[in-house]
Amino acid sequence: MRDLILKIGVYGRMVKFSHTVFALPFALSALVLAGREHRVTLVEIFWILVAMVGARSAAMGFNRIVDAGFDARNPRTAARELPAGRLSGSAAGVFVVCFSGIFVFAAAMLGPLPLMLSGPVLGVLFLYSYTKRFTWLAHLYLGFAIALAPPATWIAVTGVFSGKILWLSVALAAYIAGFDILYACQDVAFDRSQGLFSIPARFGVKPALRAARAIHAAAYGAFMMLYFAFDMTGGFLLAVGLIGFLLIFEHWLTDPDDLSRVPIAFFHVNSVISVTLLAGVLADELIRRMG
Image (cartoon, rainbow, N blue to C red; front, top):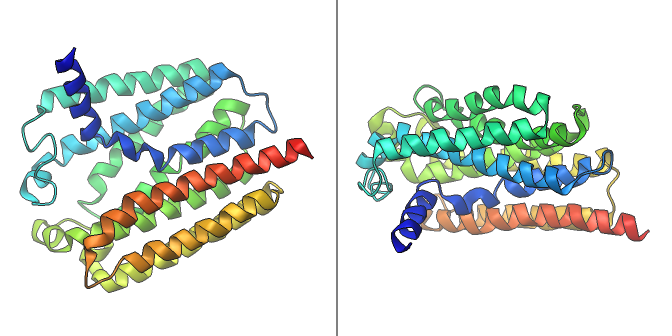
């Protein structure tokens, strides 16, 4: 039993399972909003959660396999599970296949349309791992890929697509792309030496930080548009105000001459932003029901 727990821990660290907190609250927010137009069952909630975990785990595992060679040469990532030898490539491959299957099965349980879309969604997620090899727009592609979660959740619940949920997708895409640019600032020298593409490697750290600020400003604008699109209450508006403060704080933490606080901005602040969004959506729903 102890060996099994240790092995699960190794897999969890490989895919950074704790980072699920970034995108999952956005999917749950879409679930709450979709519930206004269609009754949501506990079974649907369960399979949506399974699908989210399956898709993210498969995508992260695939990324670790594809990037294992680069990770081994980068001092910042050399201690990761694959380059450090704590997990074999074949074991990681089995992990990706299993969680891809879990995602597809969960999609099938949600209906024919989610099942039909599950393959293309996995393709989009897997493609991200190669984008840094040919375009410095990889950050934006990552945002786009992860931003499939809200409309996918909406479709799983309602069975149809709605344009207004795209505001949540735009907010998620810009939020993810912005902090991915901040994170990439740590690897400028390495990326340039390996011929990898990123906005910091292509344009430098200071221009990259300006780009991240602009993209996060767009994310904030999308959060505000979500307020209007769904006729939200003051509870959500309060959460959006807090998100704006946290975005400003995140960029204040990131000094171009001292990037040591980037991990704090990346994980701690961004996880609070995601949870704040969900709290705002839940507060809005509670206010509506009490009214």
